[in-house]
Structure formats: C-alpha cells, structure tokens
Image 1: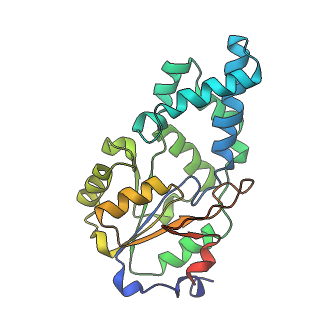
Image 2: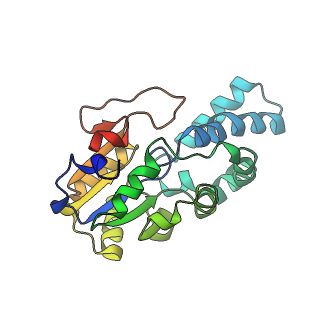
Image 3: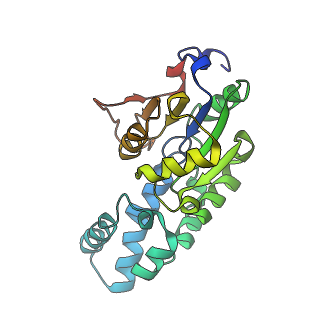
Length: 222
C-alpha cells in the first residue's frame, strides 16, 4: 500500500504535506461524543435542566465561538460553562482512534521526500492526550497547535504563521482537512492541493462538496 496509495498525485510538485488531526487522521466520533453528548448531559445534571434544554443551551453557546480559537480552547469553556472538558475527554479516552488507512498513509509519506506537518486546532492538552493514545507523533516533522500560533486554522493568518515557521511554499503544499472553512482559508492563502474528508465521524453521515474532493479513504489518492 505504501506505493499504491500515493500514485494519484504528482509528488514532484509537492514539498510539504499538512494533515489535520480530528476527523482526518483520527475518528471524529470521540470529539462528537464529548462535545455533543457528554458535555450537554453533564451541564444539564449540574444545572437541573432537561436534556433538550441543556443540549440547546450548549449548542447556542458553542456556536457563538465557532471558527475562532476560543471554540477549541478547554480553558475558555471551563470558565464559560463551569465544566472541565479535559476531564470529560478522559472519561471517553477509549474512543480515541486512528481512522482506517491513516497509519498506512503516514508510512507511505515517510518514504517520500516531503515534510509532513500535523496542524490542528486542538487545545494542547487534547493534542497531548491524542498523541499519547495513538502513538503517531513520530510520523511528523513538526506538530503545530493553532494555540501556539494565535489563530485558528479558519483564519488566513494561521497559514501565514505556519508558512513562516515551516518554510512551506503554498503552491507546493498538500492539505487534507475535514473542516471546509479551514480548506477555504487555506485556499485563500494559496495552498495548491486541497482535500476534504467524506466521513470524519465513522458513525456519522457521509459529506459531499462541490468545492473540494472529499476522500472516503486515503486509498483514493492512489
């Protein structure tokens, strides 16, 4: 697989590969269970709310920060909601998993003359938890949390800062990310090769897009 998985691209035109973590390399099912299920349930328990009311409140509150760095910040939500999301993550840590084919894809990249960067919006504590659980750290030349750069990946300034840090040339960079707002920001910056993900959550619906090719499997790059 290490060869066949990579035949669909002109690798002579690619120097850097930037990979998202949650929903791209890792199954988004874990995050969805933490944020969409466990967090509303615990918030309702603390405040004596019916499940529907607790869920609606959490959805409204999260939506107010969507696309910003605070949306991904565990410290912000602990202050805002009075709950330690890191503790909730620990309860469901057994759900953290690598998506099918991701390890093989990373192994295939290792045989190529490209620099591989993990770029995530995840809070550093979440990032550390997931790296420890999955053991994928060694696959990357650099691992970057948006919190280090001061902007979410949905902001072009993130890509400017990443380029300054890594020396990547936008037109010679490949990005795979399940978040289409991130892909749009990367496109505005000039990233040359962009792919989405068809099923970020293995238990969720399939996603299609008129803007970006969404990969159902890393094999599709073969």
